[in-house]
Image (cartoon, rainbow, N blue to C red; front, side, top):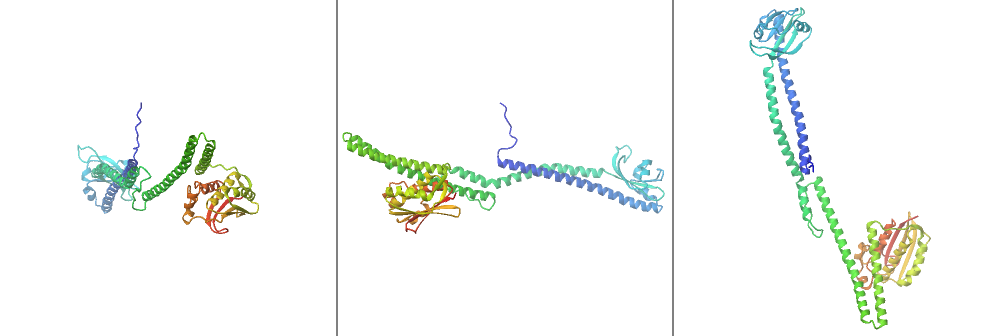
Amino acid sequence: MVKVVRLVPPSLRARLALVFGLGTSLVLLVALSLLYVALDRQLDGAVDADLAGRGDDLIASIRAHDLSAVSGDPMAQLYSADGTPIATGAAVAGQVLLRPGQVRAARNRTVKTVTLLALRPGEEPSRVRLMSRPVGQNGEVLAVAQPLTTVESAGNRQLIVLAVATPVLIGALVVLGWLLVRAALRPVDLLTREAAAISTLDTDRPLPAVPGNDEIARLAATLDRMLSRLKVAFARERAFVDDASHELRTPIAVMRGEIDLALEAADDPDEVRRSLLAAQRQVARLGRLAEDLLLLARERAGSLAVHREPVDLTDLAHAESRKLGPVNGLGIEVHGDPVIVAADDTRIRQVLANLAANSAAAGASTARVTVTAGGGSARVEWADDGPGFPPGLLDRAFERFVRGDESRAASTGAGLGLSIVQAVVTAHGGTAELHNGPPLGGAVVTVRLPAS
């Protein structure tokens, strides 16, 4: 099996330090290379300036018919128009700096070249900088030379210094980059350790606050707020499970008791029948509860199906009021003109049934349904003459298993009616609101559905 070698380190800190080190190294190498080139050109410029100054002085002496200045210069030579040396400096005595062709080339312009020249007899030739300039109108040419040994030694020393300093600077920059990255990511490490220590949403332990207003500080604050929201959601789901368990426990206990009674009174057909009928009612209650929970679960998952077709809300309300009134002991009035919407009539009937059951459980005797249309939506208002929603219940009446204290004691409902109303309305793309007050002084639930 071939082992794959990772060229890129897995750690973000190491990758950032590597990128920082490579980037700064490249920039440093380019900067030092430019510095070396600039220094080298500066040295060459200094040599040219020295040759130009010496040449100016010698040309002034030659034009004054003083050739001794040329002989006194260490490395200078004066040529006639045909290339014959006229005067020669002491250091180049016996040598020729320019060939006849080079003399002719320098009659009308200044020529700069680099050549090899033995400074002393028996020595190896050295590189010298040579500047050739015309002297006057008669074709004489002056050549001035300067050894490059000192300049090249200075350039080599600079190169050695840069070669030694570059790795040191690169190493220092890499270490500095590592320290900076580690300091910048220290809050991330702290957040990681604290998040790993939070093993359950039951704990009240928050994530540590990161000072400042940079990206990491905002990330820490966002994660802490997200954790708080998850804790709230977890608490709600746990309360939902607790309430569901409570609602399931009661009918199951009643069913068990009724079945035990039926078994004990096996020789009494009437008692057996009463027990089985009571158990049957509890089974029906369990079935309704299971259906309600399934509906809410589908709504939470976004998979609650609604089969839309044209529905006259006013006609539907009239039909349902005739059935729901006697069942719930309510006098239901329906007002409004025909309003057509695209909706699932079965689900809308379920909404009206839940609202009627909720009003009856609260002790209302009369309910009024008002259907109107306008503003691109159809409005169904359910109002009753009951005591209304308790003040502490208005903000959370649509939550699951939420009931008033009186209704909890007197009603056999599970507290899912209004939750189902909101789920069905939301699945239709509508909204549901509630308050207390007119027209009957009790609870008022307003449902808005998109108009056809």
